[in-house]
View 1 (tube, rainbow, N blue to C red):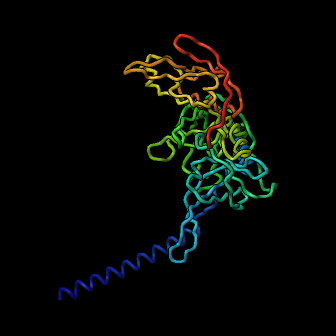
View 2 (view 1 turned 135 degrees about the vertical axis):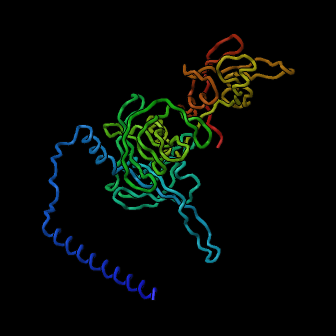
View 3 (view 1 turned 90 degrees about the vertical axis):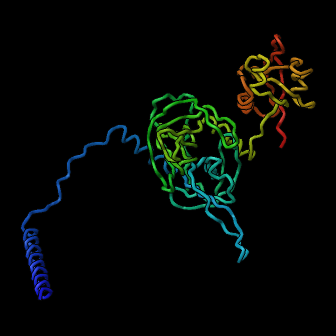
Length: 371
């Protein structure tokens, strides 16, 4: 009997719930039909600020110059023996000229067997490698797009930049194309390491958001000119954390034309082996590049430069210490290499050298590095 009573009670409660729900629905329907519900009035916005107009204009002007780069590696299908292209990564770049040259970072295409460039009009083109310079993390590709599809980016300069200047970065972070971020020049003359371990000097630091995929894209000033190539972020997580770096355009404008002409940078050499800073410290030498070895047929040998030669334990015959090239100080070997990159094989430079207490100037004609 108790079960029957319980079943009857539950049935009554269920019926009551249905009736109340139906009544509530009817009430809501009546209320909805009688309560006014109109779109809210739009508040007047007014004109964009001057800074906003500047940002909008720069993006409209330069975004057609920015490209999306996708890379792939080739692999052999063991079942069909067909060669497949396996996606490797993505990055950014920009159109350099109407001949179809595209500039990006070396690390964007490093290790890839193929690359494709997608222009702002969404057309995609297979890219050919023109040249790379890993020491500055730069690479040049070329696509066979017709000139009317290409919008070369306006070129600026980096030597006159000031901390606090407005900057804009355009790229493809996380594969999201044509993304714009803004910020300021946070610092100048920073140093970062290239993929080869060489120091890249004069780097621009910015707080404009740079994330994975932005690499190789342009950093622009408020006139819409290229002032740097976004190359790295400083972040423990790998995502943007307020510090990004860009290779200064003055370096880019020096290197890219040489890569287009020659496919590589033909580095001039002095024909010496340089000592480490520890060698200078051990002998109490001033800042400079101590020569440990001179190539018998190299430029330094022809100019009469001499190396430091160990005689007995703790004793050496004093050689030459290079302290400047054409008046530019060379406190260490890395700086010496940076200075030499401004010249070409066949150029003659004036070295300022110390041998003991004797300081003299020596003219040296540079050779090309062995291939």
